[in-house]
Length: 177
Picture 1 (spheres, rainbow, N blue to C red):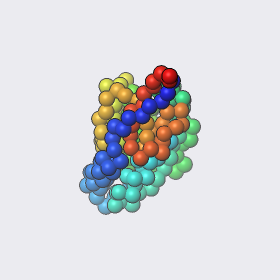
Picture 2: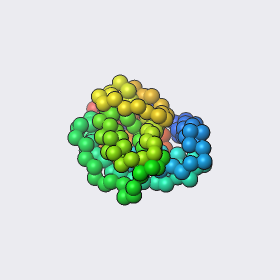
Picture 3: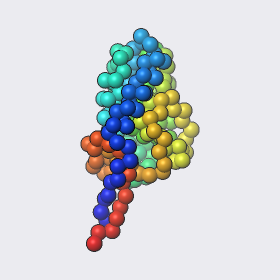
Picture 4: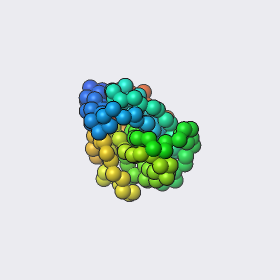
């Protein structure tokens, strides 16, 4: 099978949406420090762009969480491969996600981080796929609502490929001749 990628959201639209989300976050947290929690690996591009666009003082934290492996479907088995290494008690925390699909991973992360006593905990995602939701998740800052398609680029991957695309594309498979 041949992998085919069709551009879905352009680099320019991504840049514009990041600026919009940054403005919303700045308004909600005027003059306050923020702690972004990047969900690796897919969210790295989005968090880098978002953290540069936000004028507040931003601290960057990283968690490595896996639920896909090399598949296009979430296994439903969430593994915390790397946890944040600093306390977030009494801090304004924003989980920065690349995509919210089933919601399982984010529901687990949200509960885990809330148990650590942050001042506030918000969720910011560049992509939201509500038609696939299994676990309820309230999204505070949403980039784009997308249909039930498998997307790659801008940090999102298929079997660790395509993260470096500067746009978001829909991945499909075609028979090779």
